[in-house]
Length: 256
Image 1 (cartoon, rainbow, N blue to C red):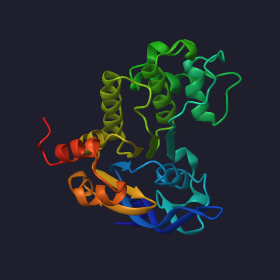
Image 2: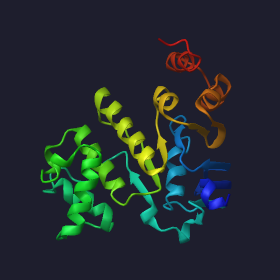
Image 3: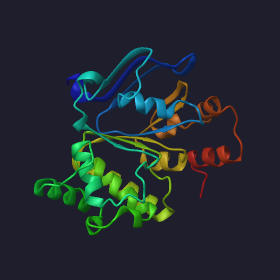
């Protein structure tokens, strides 16, 4: 099997610095195609830096990164979808949902939407159960509705890799469960690889096929039951307090 077919992301000896600050140090890992990967670690661990590097937004100090078998400078951005944690669109801006989705097609805000673009936007919105929102202003959306539209924006180009930064932020428990159902449905239909930052260890354990435990260095990587071990979590977080203990008990099958 070719390298391109086997791995969605390959990282070798990656170090990233901001001035004198080392954000990531000597990271090496291979993410299989079709995996659902959760990235966990304490604040300041380099989680966002890792996905920004994979997206080509941050230049490494050293090391090599291949995404979908390509060096970042040769990667077609159409092959990658991104759902940010913080939605930077001004909610008072008179934008419609379909316009936001089409901006994912164009990688720029559309002045006028073509019929073909509208059809693609409606298909993407329908995929996430939000076709009824197409002509509505985003200023009126709940957190869950807005997240659906951003998922449609990421899915509209049918990417092979979808990167999500804290996708559950700002949505309620029911909306979160629905979001994971949509992500898993897209993955099943497309065979895409999903890469997600999360602080929710339970979500990582339930939904991810692989977990990256990070604290500037790679602490653990593998199936959730192995990566979310007491040793890895203690090394990453430095202690096991109440919240950590609950997560550890859940991982061990004691949480009811």
